[in-house]
Amino acid sequence: MPTSTPTSNDNAYYRRPLETQRNLGGDMSMMCFVRPQCPQKFDSPNKHQIKGLNVKALGEIFFPPPTWMTDSNYNYSNLRANSENDDQNWGSFSVNMSMYNQILIETEWDDKWFFMYGRVHPYALTWEIKPEIGNNLQPYTTPALIVRDQGYQP
Image (cartoon, rainbow, N blue to C red; front, side):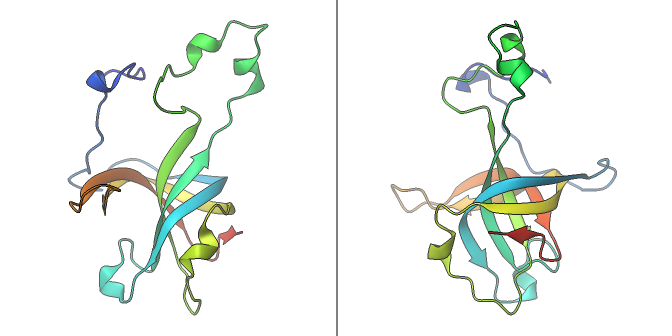
């Protein structure tokens, strides 16, 4: 599988959920600013995607490029991803967190940024999302950011 970023949708590699999580390598921890969207609280532990985490959301994370890569005095622009349709400085994650004894009000999350600390696991989750047009649910696969122990603040 090539390691370079695809230049068009025709040669894009779609990420699929892995068959097993065994022997996939280590976890990565990170602190970042996240804009969570479409938060959903689970009613029972049987519905949790990650055991003990009762809230999920789609999270957008901005990864600013370092100045040495964007400086026009240096010729490092060829290191950056060449994408015509997407902003290569953004990443989408499945944000999973615990929010017990709190009420989730979805409208309070609109266009709000959170500072979060969590672990990025080496497997991807597949969500079903209702598109703006039509009623059929569409699969959406994204890596998981696990936020534990109140590791977030608005």
